[in-house]
Image 1 (tube, helix red, strand yellow):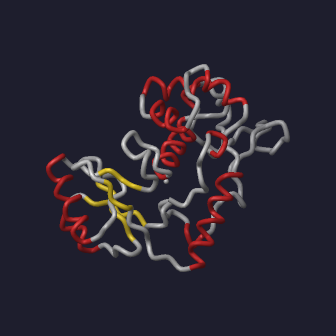
Image 2: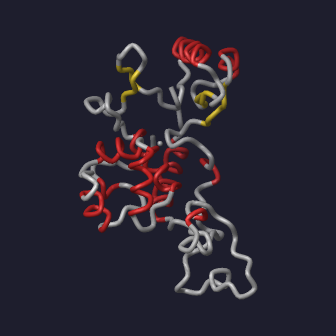
Image 3: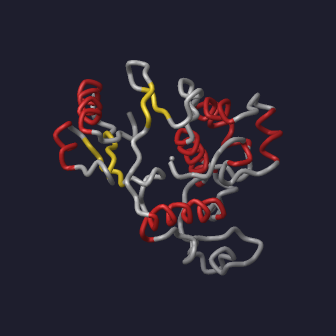
Length: 222
């Protein structure tokens, strides 16, 4: 979610606007914990995406990651930076061993992410199915393609983050997909973290987590 700047109130969230505060109050959401609970509920998430101008599925999912990484979960509010294991105990999250240069680049990436505008697909306001997706505008008369000032910003050179940390998890780890416990042996616990595949069953998932704890590998979606 992590290397994000401290998230202590709603206004600290990336892409957050002042007018969202009153709109969220109308949904009985007044703090980060309530927002996290609402985003984890499909109906409330859809309502937030529909009611908040400029917030699509991509931004909503980004908020979920930021809140999770900041330690906002029903069971982890007392110990920020802790993660819950199945036995109900709290264990400190494993941190990567990064150089000063890497840490600086992660901080810079966070700053770039915070000021990067949301990229809206052409005709997003007309068709709901286009919201949260991106396609390059190609119409011969497209004002958006020609960068007219009253049209939304389009994806262009200069919006990307530093190459050194591009694609890394917000914590600084390189994510590696894992589908069975034996694949954990190939990971470098200092720089890589495991993400369990979505097709893995409950029994094998438990085995993967158990072995990861033994060898000191962080599991991002335990």
